[in-house]
View 1 (cartoon, rainbow, N blue to C red):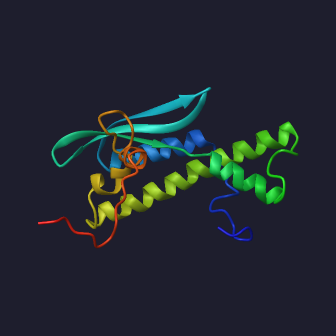
View 2: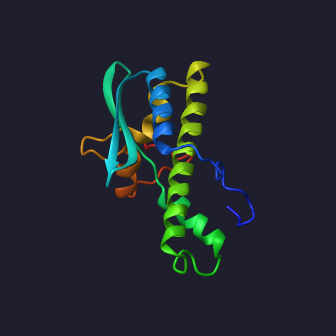
Length: 159
């Protein structure tokens, strides 16, 4: 993303707790049978949920990755120095803004997936699969990433 392009949802003032509740509602609409909120140091950091996928109960975990947005907000304030020169109160305000933006972006993504589910273009398990939890608790994406598995287009299995 170029420095002059706006950050999607960058000006939101909607509290992350409200957004997490909206995402929960969307997940239930998509078929979630239970949804839990994950906290760290008293702040919401993700959601976990269960839903049936191809007849089996599956668990999912979706983190709100705030750090990249915070880093980008800081860099836009000072392209050369990042957040090192900011006063603590400005760092706190920028981090809170990054939290709100991260959660709002997750909501918009989930809403887009829900629209595709409702039209029959995809199944719930299909769009949420990267967040499906592997037996060891990591998401499928985290598992693939840790194994350094490469998925290449057009490659076929040997016969």
